[in-house]
Length: 220
Image 1 (cartoon, rainbow, N blue to C red):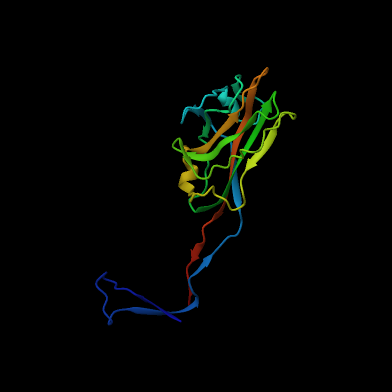
Image 2: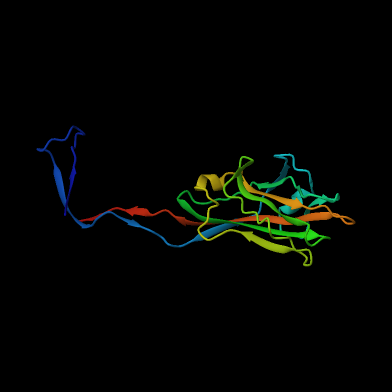
């Protein structure tokens, strides 16, 4: 295979009579793909609570859901009867620093949570990702699973391999300070004791690979 590099020493328009170099292509252009999967795992820098559609149960000490430190954010409901939804527990400012060529493979949300007093009083309501305080992607809440109250706390990981929560996530979205997670629970009222939803932390783990790189030809 031959490769022509044509130039004009006076930077003028090329004509066939001017200088032309002819090379033999030893190795043509090709793409290199690195199969290595890397990840970044972050805790949120900021927490907020938000009422989207009239949720009743308020979160107390919401900043306690930032780190794995055994200090809890709590949502408490006393009255018996139908379940009430907690307000959104919104975690953001994760400060991801994925490289510009990162391709997102999947995202995990890890939550340490438990139920207090009544073993069948708390369940998931909303578990999603967020940008700009808006729900995005699949709701991974498990409505039929009651939160454990017998152990100090339970680590629950919301994810599936190669799952980006139904989104086309990019490096720019993930690195944004407005990217984060939203968590809300269904709290069934107790009769003699309060039903309390307890959350210790909301950690995001993002897996990614680097985009293929183009290698130029080797000429002789």
